[in-house]
Image (cartoon, rainbow, N blue to C red; front, side, top):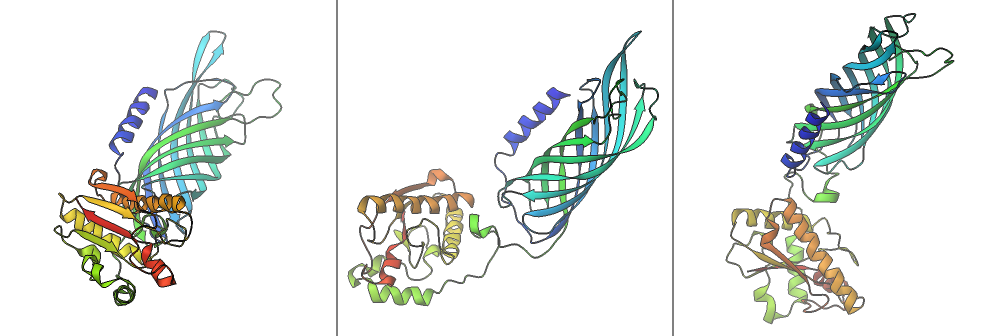
Length: 366
């Protein structure tokens, strides 16, 4: 069983190396189901590996980070104990019901890690057990902690891989209470593999735009008239013929250069400003429509700061744009990056508007 689980894990890691980006909602309902591999951990008998089980869950996500899950499961666990006539096989069958709190650490990634904790009930049924004075069937409480990964398959389906640790409130889960044992508790672990299907979603979340830019169709809020006015006010006439002033990211494959003008980056930062995303989104679509197109991305800064610092900052800005394009499906081999620092200003660095325009990205066809 352990070898099979290892093989399945390897296949999943290879097969899901390229997964789609998650599409979050502000709140949602989802149904989960799958297989479980349980194993006794802290018990008085010798735990065996010939175990199996399954689970069914109903989950309510209240936000991008927080969720509550009601989970039912079945587990078959086996262990050995020694008697006067030799080794005996003990079996524990458990029906569980848990209420867990989940917290998603990085909800915007296509592979999203989470942790959980909660309480539950455990109705255990014993067969051929060591302590014959115990009730064959009994209900016990348990506490749960663990962690997992959600792998985004598409907008409605996710793959679940999860590890859970379960601590019962008695020492009878394995059917063996040792003489002289005043108190104690048994515990077991569970490895889950399953699917999560979203039954209902609320309003689409904009939270992930902080990380990956635009995750769904959005209205283009860029003020192109303002950008054009800035160009006319600050760019010398002899270079205006090289500047794209009409929706630059929609240029065709025959254009020689695109200039993403406007306040593209925060001051002293490689973080793109909100108005830059519509242009980059259109640039990604143009490159997807023209698979033979290759571009060189050049990053620029204003003249505030040392020349060496600005060179490094401009290269970071170029890499930020490259990372955005590759996240939208553009092959990284079609993109080269370089940092030009404060060289080749297109506007007057003596004004705030001019410096904003100089913090720019240029796309050049190759």
